[in-house]
Image (cartoon, rainbow, N blue to C red; front, side, top):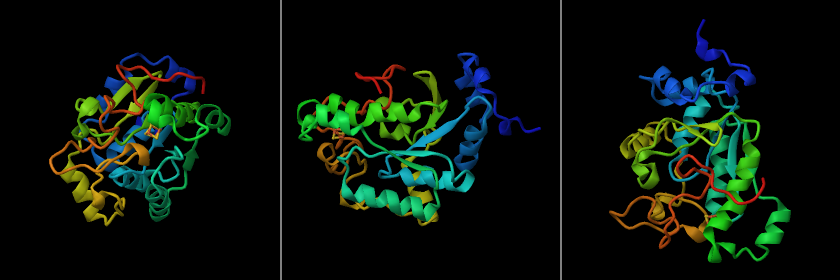
Amino acid sequence: MDRRNVKMPRDALSSAPADRASRIIRDIDGLRGPERLKALLTHPLTGKVALVSSFGADSVVLLHHLSQVAPATPVLFIDTQMLFPETLDYQREVAEKLGLTGIRVIRARAMHLAQEDPANTLHLRDTDACCDLRKTVPLERALSGFDSWITGRKRFQNGSRATLPIVEEAGGRLKLNPLADWTPSEIADHMRAHRLPRHPLVDKGYPSIGCAPCTSPVAEGEDPRAGRWRGEDKDECGIHFVDGKLVRTRAA
Ligand code: SF4
């Protein structure tokens, strides 16, 4: 029997040894692309899995892989209500074109927004608190019930991602990064070969796309993420972990 297709009961998952990330990495050795993603989705140690996507500059490659192997997988899209309108249009276009049926739009609770950012200006005073309110807490709530989540992060994005493993333990869940070792040219080649739609802001100088107030165009030769929170000592929004810890300040 192919054990990749047999899921463990949840109590078995919780009692799995701390080195389960390295066991999974060993089991998927030699696989890439959709085959790697399928192996991660069906591995007995990954449990119930969601994919988290920003529908940003190159998100479509991972989403295309998903459409090939498991198009009904839950895809969590965090709408901070501060995104570019182009991102919202692109999200709908990609989901429809690829036939992704598990899209779940995640937002902060209206009550929290009214209490903590009634004028939508928190990002001007405290970007960490704003990311916490609009991204980290809603995502943590949406991830309850999932054992693992898939991200589209890549090592070439540098910063804290330069040494990104394909599988990591983080905050009691597994984080699966199936494109961690992909290069910019592999991403571009895949998009060209499969005629995948590009985010419209890429051609306007945005190689990395987040919320509109906190994303600026990037000049030739700059780091691809240099336009994110430009001028601040910050290169992650808090939905990812620092030294294996979830950074958040309020209950989900
Ligand atoms: Fe707020 Fe900017 Fe973070 Fe978006 S990226 S949640 S606007 S601080």
